[in-house]
Length: 204
Image 1: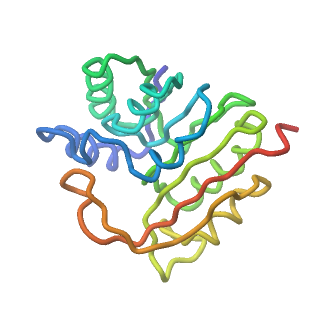
Image 2: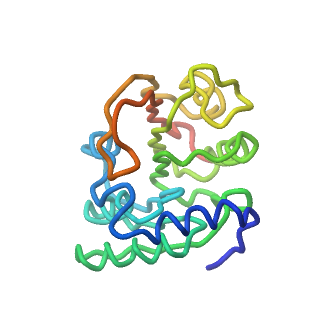
C-alpha cells in the first residue's frame, strides 16, 4: 500500500537522513517502549513514523504482527532489511500521517516513538485512537517536549497530549529530563513526555 506524501520537502529531508550509512537512531528499540511492553500480549501493532525499523523489529521479535508506517521508502527499506537480518517479518506502509487512516478496531497496540507531526495532524490522529484500538488496546508514546509549547505547537508536554487522547484511559503520563542514547541523532539530555494509554471502553 502506498499513499503519496503531500509534504515533499520533509520527505526529502528524511530520505537524506536515512540514506546515510548505518542507522540514524540505532538498531536497538527505544528503552521506554521496551519497558512498557514487558507484560503485554502479542497481537496487531502499528508503529507510526517508524523510520529505519528499530522499534517495529523489536515488536515483531516479541510476537506482534507489526505494520510500520513512514513517508520515507528509504527508511522502510532499511527497516525490512533489519527485520530480515533478525529473522522476523514486518509489513511496511509508505504514507503521510496527514492522510493516514488508523482504521476501526484494527490494533492491539499503537506505538508513537518520537513521531511528532504538526499539531493539526497530531490531533486528527489522536481523535482516531479510541476507534482504532481494540478493547484493551494500548498506545505507547514518547516524544520530545518544549517546555514553552502550547497545544498548537509540535512538541507539547504530557498534560496537553493526554487531553488530546480522550477518551482513552491514561495509565502513565509523565515528563522528565533523561539521557537519550539512540544512534547519532538522539544523544544527550532531552526533556520527553512518556505516555501509556488504554482503550478501556472499546470502540463505539
